[in-house]
Image 1 (cartoon, rainbow, N blue to C red):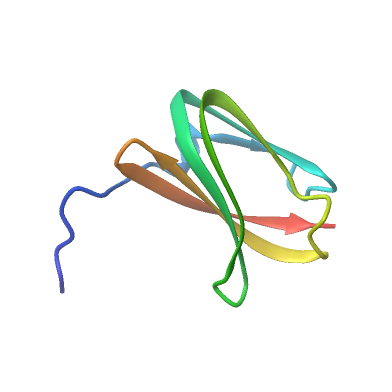
Image 2 (spheres, rainbow, N blue to C red):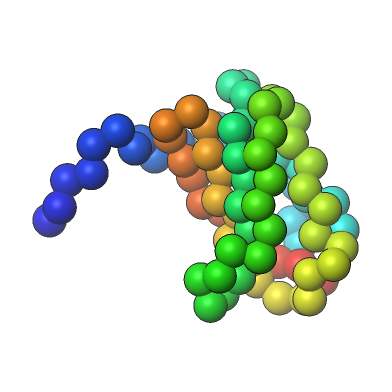
Length: 87
């Protein structure tokens, strides 16, 4: 297996992501500032990307069609991916 250095996984249990399922705004709360949030559809395409520097990030999913998405959260050099359902 390949070893990737410099990228760490963040334990998803350290995040608070709500609401899920989401209608419009999804909130991401973490104890360190979130650097970037990407929303990826089930085809693996990035449909939304937002640079930020906040411990309480909000991402507006209003314009996206209903379905499943992955929210990719970057904090410095670490990341986590969480699945959400858009209603």
